[in-house]
Length: 119
Length: 112
Image (cartoon, rainbow over all chains, first blue to last red; front, top):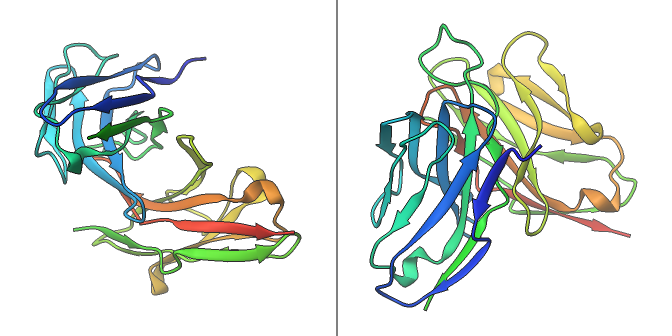
């Protein structure tokens, strides 16, 4: 029962390097999300996707890119890493609770997180 | 825009005592409300959720929450806390495809 799987769990980057955080879910959920969590700030939405081939910006998208070529995978790309991107990143997925509404109202299922440090 | 306020950054409770964590939301319609718990180094786990109906909802691990529309609140309660309840608790609101809006969290400390 894998759920949402994120890799890597930990990573240290140098300023200016690039990397991709991988996220895959096996629940056939249409909706997927990337959040970042900083101490005392809760979770901030970076990007989200409502289905394969569709992505949209969240609250804090600058410095990141995403793609959604399959239902299962939603990688997050960091280009030109900066110290401000030091954070814990969470991938999540959900499915619509009420199909009459325009979006999901069900719970989000989270991965265990990826701790990224940029030095 | 929707928003969530958790007024208490830290709360310390003695083991066996009752607990109430506060959550206030701002949303233009009836929201869907959630409480999540995060243990150190872990992802978030859903405790309970409110969509409609009975305003008192029961969750896992003995938690409950009450939706009060007049106060725009969704406070989390537990009659008797255990040391294993020490964690970060997040209230969240959402109804659209662009995910949930989270509060900043309340850090719960359990005293022996």
